[in-house]
Image 1 (cartoon, rainbow, N blue to C red):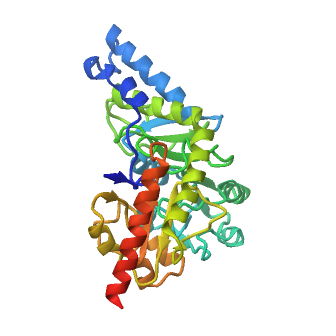
Image 2 (tube, rainbow, N blue to C red):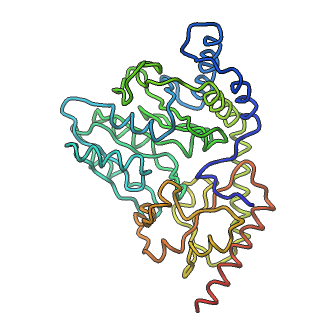
Image 3 (cartoon, helix red, strand yellow):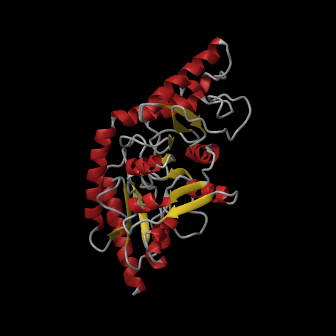
Length: 367
């Protein structure tokens, strides 16, 4: 099986597995005061420092069950007198959009900004939407469906000029690029950077204290109750450290694979979203007349996707592709190829050649 679904999740790095394995046997509760508990707590603090190394200075990492929990904590946990407006972008992940809808039902005004045809938000529209009533502006760094990189630093600057906070969903960019300056809250998770699932983080700028969503023992800085897993935290830390170490090499590998994929696919494909302002490990493409779902069924030994894994079971058309202005037919003819650190040039070229040949055959039979 050729795995081309790196935006959904990534293979566990061998170095990460090695960091996690000892904590299968060392089972002590990291919140206990005995020697083994203190050793587990020390491992978690070391992992926290490793994750923090991929994030800006001047803040603190809170471990969560994943980025979805981190986003919920950020959006539902911040409050300020007289600020009753949230501003976000139409192409955000469902974790952001659904949270905003939930808050909208409870009295907050929610503004969803449109994007251009290339998937990028217009800064002048951000400027027009943000005012002294704005509590928070949410914009993701790298879009999970089309890979475009939003101007996060500029959006944060606009938010701050009006006294608002800025939340960045950095899940797809964490470890892969230097985090931009500006956000007050950043959500990340391990399994997008070759770490384990069910562990994420919310980075908060110093002095910012969201109200907790989960109440109990207050184990995680008083903001997130529940026993932390030393094994998962160690895995996240090792994945973050490895990502930082390999950032340049991984980036060069992605850029080369992008060229390999486009050459193997050949003509007749359109790229969805900006080509210039983009993470190169995400290739979202469409071919006129293609039935993406049928292509997925015809090539079951190639793992690719039609869009976000989180929404794939809902039967809904991609809200991201709709926001680009694509028709339903164009959305149905779109597929997402995600490749990464462990994808070889040859396997990607072979898979893309098969995708192109199968798509061409599908078109001939449909004619």
